[in-house]
Length: 280
Image 1 (cartoon, rainbow, N blue to C red):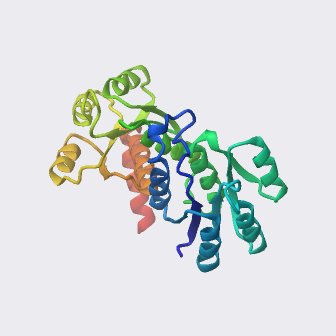
Image 2 (image 1 turned 90 degrees about the horizontal axis):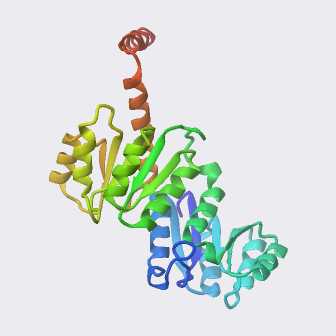
Image 3 (image 1 turned 30 degrees about the vertical axis):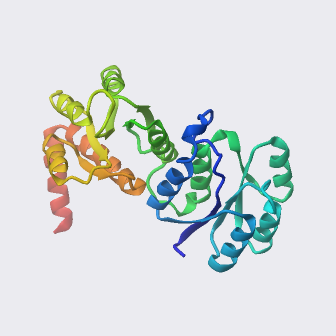
């Protein structure tokens, strides 16, 4: 398996986020898997505790994500403990949570907290293996996506990486946030929004004296749209599901470029002379 791997025992009735309605639940695990795989975490899914045991025996994953209250769930947890596999227990009650802790499982997530909390717990487990970016990279980020679930998961990841993040789901909300908060430096902008399209927002902010940097995201694989977005000033055009590592690298690059442009001209020139001298 890959350097980082996880076996997930699917819980199809888990909400995307706390309080999510039933009709939004089935997509939750698909989004979680997409996000984890975009971080180069290999994901294998099981439907039963017995299947999870078989997969652990065959694949030796780093982590088992399971609700121990399912049939034979604690048996799978026992197997994981005996064979040295780490476990995150997803539970729906304090009783099950406490029972899981008696099995020596320190990482637990309440079922009603939703998939965003599950993502946070998994990323925390893999923290030591994640890319060595600074914990406090600075910069205010606005994530705009027509799906609040996508925006929430991207935001959850970026907050965990030390960024200050806010979200919006429609174009007018995005524009209002940018006008009211000039400290926003990077906008992760969905191409398709319910009211004002992402391209129209990009055109508007590109005319500002000090516009934020825009990273356009879209499910459309269209070279012409990508070229137009970049011509209007977008830093990049990324295809959904977004690779979170690539997105983070883009954001760090955007912030570095903004910091460089904010320097007086003489500092830029001096920096160029210093780099030239160091290379000789």
